[in-house]
Image (cartoon, rainbow, N blue to C red; front, side):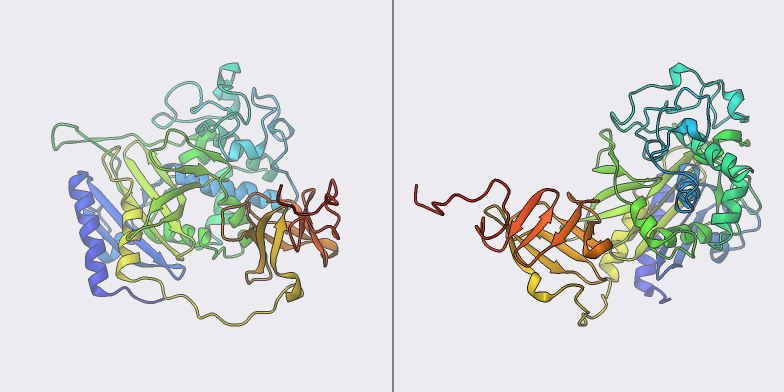
Length: 452
């Protein structure tokens, strides 16, 4: 772990200080993750008793709200990887008797189930919660058809927490603690506050006054936003999203989480949602874009954000005890500052074994359109347009010498490689455009290429 340069630390501190002052946040803690650890953090404002100076700011608990959904998703995916459930399972298979029983677990994880945004009854974030039966779900909690459009649903994650609880035979908070938080070293993350912890506050819109916000056990809705966390612990969750999973999930499952399943049309920036994580595209300093993965969080009295740049291997977080006002773009701003001040020095290129005969790589043609098949390291292949946009995907080795699409247009599809053609999702790619010697579907005209 390399400490940040003093000049970088001052740049980051200046951004955090301005966010705390301009947002009128009673107290704010922010940090930067690099090399799998919290390499810098700062606290501003009135930190609670027990946080003795800036160095201890990383040990103050704040409510992280919907960042809890990422932890919930990890618990669900652990069950999936164990074979105890499938993302295509209808909810009814694990939690029977709800009006959303025909919606799948995958749809609930990606906010595509058409479930109501909130649970019925009183405002769940400000009143004590109870059991699933006490929610009294009804037909009104099905607000959209399944898989029709993205619709953010706290209720959906409450139901996912119930799935985990029933399969494990104990409360979701206990499962999250034992199977995710403690293995990751998140020993200061809990469902209720443990001192030192910030007190939730609302800030008056027209005066510099604050109002105490309530805090209760959310009951069955805990998985939607119950957790309290410190900067040091939240950095460990960021490290998981960057691939340092601590054995809690496989890196392949983490990558699966980060692939967008639905797109939020209400967002001011391009924003998608994977499995328990938000995916956003941001402008890079100096041009271009980068993709950030993470989650925001809001509960009465608290705002939080955790975002990672998987390409750069960095992350940033911010937590404040205010109901509104804190700059939600603060973590992305910190990542921009870090990228400019201390750009990543990438690992040197070295020769790598080729997973196929190199003679099979290079140009191929889908009809008249040129593509190129190349080895991209890590035992993977990439097929994409040559010199022009086109359908593109990476492929991992599959059974019997086949290859399986990892992402892009051909995700999940099988690629078969022969000497004179590639076979992919009924398409045949040939070494020359419409090679008559290859098994081109529909055949190739005997006239060949002509001028008219």
